[in-house]
Image (cartoon, rainbow, N blue to C red):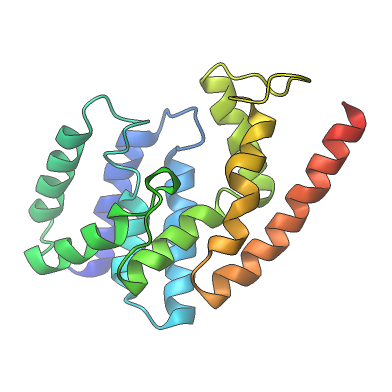
Length: 196
């Protein structure tokens, strides 16, 4: 099976897993991250297939999304072997996807990993990032905002995470995209507090 056919199989696998997610980690999030990872890989001269494949699977095994993260990873690895991904390529995909999460606080060791992390973080910014923030907050019964309670509100999430991301991008291409999306979020927050 060639790489295009493998990516098609991976897309379907991811769609089956995430089609009903209501937290902002749905199939379309995976698609945007994979597409952005592919774009960044081309701009940064990285392995396009590794970046795109890792972008598709980067949230499989996330503790926030899976009751049994280890089982989810085992099943994914078995699936990837079954569609003809070699052990060497699988290891590269795993390396590119394992340190992506913001909550882990890690910097990936490979260019491909840095690209996938950038792609995931870009999807947390701008208009899409705003929408995902409130989707996640609603799905987890968080308040939108509170005058005195700061913790665990959707608006506080902008200060705890989203406004930090622009300065944590690794690649020049991602830095440019993140800067524009960051400005949009600043405008949104300013308008939010004016209305509040």
